[in-house]
Length: 258
Image (cartoon, rainbow, N blue to C red; front, side, top):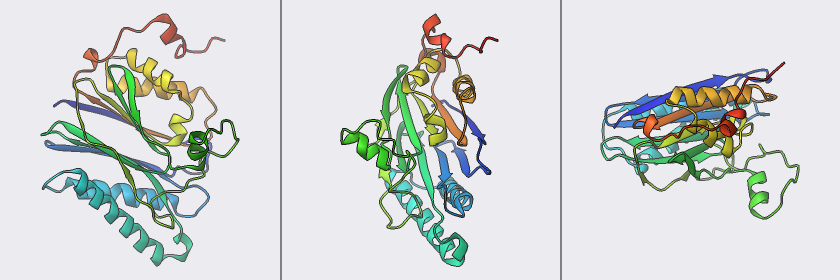
């Protein structure tokens, strides 16, 4: 199974970049991780790095690979984070979002996990197939039928390190198809792009790197207050999954005229 990926981690207008991305691509398994330190609390950067580093490190080890194994690995990251909180009063409330994509290359299947408002998008045949549900107050109000409430989208009720501790959400295991595409990203990335724009960009390219670069270019033209971090992952041959772009599709990504 051919897997290609590309990553970006770009600082916006914030004083520091608390985002961390990581990837581990082995012969039999793969893992792609994005963490975003929760703003407003000291230690977000440290929390994001601790979870990213430890999750990748655990999954590098040989042995069985399954949703249960990855769930245990994430819970171990939570335990290590709680231990680090206890060692430093300054960082006693540090926490981070998590979005992680796991791929079993031998069984040709995938699953993902998330906590907070970092997301995993799954595209199939050039269209959005699935996306994670944010652990945020804004998402809860939207699902309750309240639109345009003005609620800050980053008011979270779940993140690794937050109290009370809540379970990380896992997807069902899916069978991969040639041409599947995934986007694992922070809220600073997805807040500046609509799903339709992601799909349009996907149909305009022939490679994973091009897809992420095109979306990054579109985001960069908007006002970037937050940091932007994303991992794009292609399964199989991109050329067989994308469509020839139309003028309407390309208009969104054309350079601005002066």
